[in-house]
Image 1 (cartoon, one colour):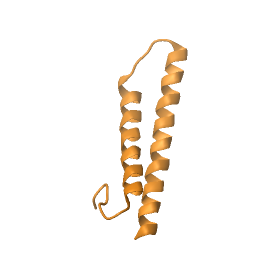
Image 2: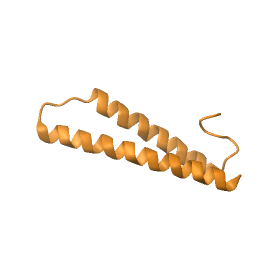
Image 3: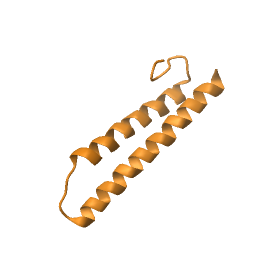
Image 4: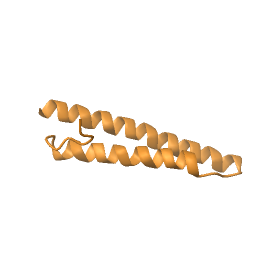
Length: 70
């Protein structure tokens, strides 16, 4: 199965692309950005958590939209 189905609508494909970008950014931010201050570390965890959560929502919405149009 292709990660981004070419048969789905343009809006569903765009949502999946945004979801994959947020997933990659959230994982990279959580793994490679290191700080020593507690406040900065909390902001990094919050930002990476938001990006990971948004990626889940965008990917599920894209899958749902592509299933509806098929």
